[in-house]
Image 1 (cartoon, protein in one colour):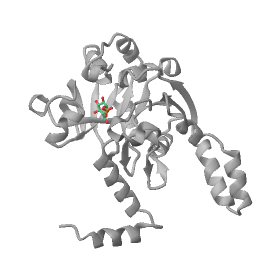
Image 2 (cartoon, rainbow, N blue to C red):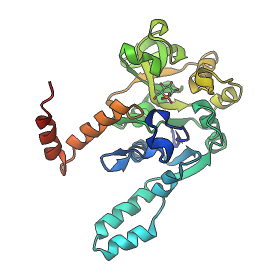
Image 3 (tube, rainbow, N blue to C red):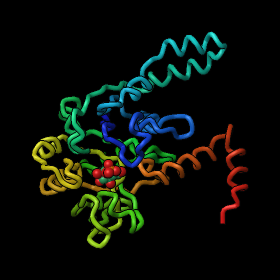
Image 4 (tube, protein in one colour):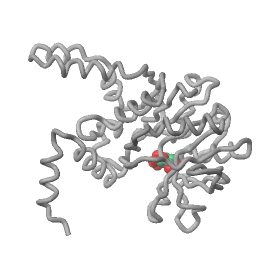
Length: 287
Ligand code: G1P
């Protein structure tokens, strides 16, 4: 069983500057909850019990969010908002969360390496909080089912349009069953002309602890960063790794347009505001 999840959250969020100059990208709101809240919920609904968030400079808002705020709760109760106060407490009860700081932003691979002693000798999940996936069965739960069947690392993938291929890790795979591919190769952000397919890795992984020794020896790659994709490529020489085409609607909230789309889609599903939002969209009279 997969009981631990690593949430890398130390990145600079350069695509969202200037906002990310002083607030973490993981705290961007999707209607009224931060992105990372949805991902922690997904993890918990998938059976994850312990979470480690890899934080860094300027990320304390994440820790505050999952902590208890007695002052806020007292204030809400004083104003007769007991239900809301209870809801606030539920956030800190969601999961057991640990934190470790990545002292330098040396890349996703290095961030995962910071979780080494937390993970120990078990297979573990990795969740990137800027990928929000709306799915009937939480995507990490879907992936754990594949892991249990294949007993091997699993990367979530989806088909991406040609113009977006260079924004993702891209796999070359051989289909083994519905939605499951045996990975033959993986490349970090290739130009579309040299990409082995259009199956892009999205922010959900199930990895095994062998990855840590490899990460430890991985040199900086694309963007001068220690890339998780490069380490996975080395791991391919040692064992089978699978890609799983997820079932669900994914929003790349690390991308401005993706973030806006997610907010529109989620607000249209919210009883309290959907009517007003729909009315507004209609009035925009978009051609
Ligand atoms: C990272 C990975 C990339 C993956 C992507 C998914 O890139 O390096 O392989 O496709 O996450 O969101 P980033 O988005 O951090 O640039």
